[in-house]
Image 1: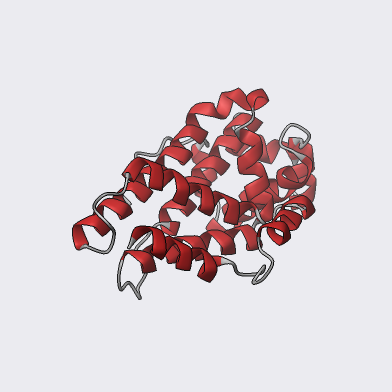
Image 2 (image 1 turned 90 degrees about the vertical axis):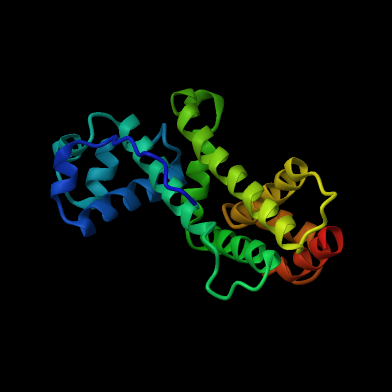
Length: 213
């Protein structure tokens, strides 16, 4: 995936602290906001969790909104890695499967981040709408590229509708991301899949191959 130009939402002082501290600050915000909601998470809460002063965070970010934008930027970087062609690439289906597996893994390991991605897309967080749209658009563009290359290689039928199939693949990946974000989502997984609930990807791939090959 070609990396887009990144706007910085932090102050220069943020770049002067160690990478470990930068990551810990972002991860602390994700953990608290993912559990309690971004609107309900105060800068004071983040500072207390980190064991630093309230003013320290404002020396790195002008506002909590800028901190939210920084988290979305982190999400875009993560999504870019999710779509990278796997080292064990054999055909288009191995690439699709790798994206699904990475999505499921991210959702399992970082449920608070997925909760936060969902929250910033809601109407009351309209200040993030342009940025979250960028996050969504990048994924759709990548799915379309994977499909186009698959058609060119002969892995995928030439008569498929690229836009529609990109929608289907994106919807599957999005659901795999969400499957561990709450007990409700975990319940949905058991309803969707009567077997292989922990890893439904092989069954999904088997049906996709029937549709696309």
